[in-house]
Length: 342
Image (tube, rainbow, N blue to C red; front, top):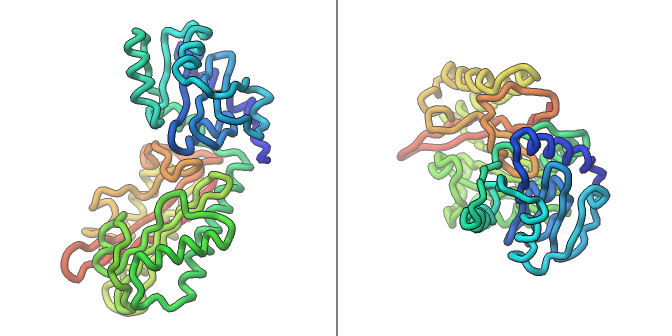
């Protein structure tokens, strides 16, 4: 059992609710793992509901979780969503209710609240801000997830992949991760070859892999629900594609070297883009195709705050993923991605 300080997490959340004069925050999920429910209660299953007020918290789920959070969170079996939701509203005397906009319950809950003439506040960004700085246990989980993501790719690359389809290699990645005791469920694995790699986040197909074309991997293992995110491009030839591989690797190294507390993400982005421009790939660099240099990461593969607009602080976790994407006939894509935990 992970020894997260749920009491400390809840106090920080409740302080924000009180400051914003929010009577009740509704967190929950119907059909999938919800990172915010897990973060504050340790509940990983679904459906589940978590109601938080400035001075209390109550979890509803189908079974009692084995979580240290129950020292500070009340628990009740979930058996009637509407009845229990109404009960929570009444007990909280809630007029101002905040909703996690990223939850699959956001739309129906918001609709119900409007019918009840409650004042509804979106709260998605606030939740990400509260989770932005990781503690030591979280940092270790993230590092382990990244290490296993890299190991998964490395083991698959030991095999001869020429002639196999992108889909087949994606399946090999998934099996390899399972054999390592984890799963590539931070997001579906990406395997793209040749011109198809110019689509930054394409989907694997039956396209056959060739030794004379680039091969791009992007995978993410979850370890204790924390996500890895690792990209690697391999190419054995020479010429422009080889030069692009070297240029992107250099951009990654320079950005990672500069990534320290007090630096803004925008500075890292300009540095990486500048390296690619200097090497002759400025017109096809990541920033020219609408991509950012990286993103924050944690219980979600993409934690929805802008890296470029943020001044980095100790404890933040994020990816750096410069790339070159040349579209059209004879095109290609190159990306390398690493995680940084400050």
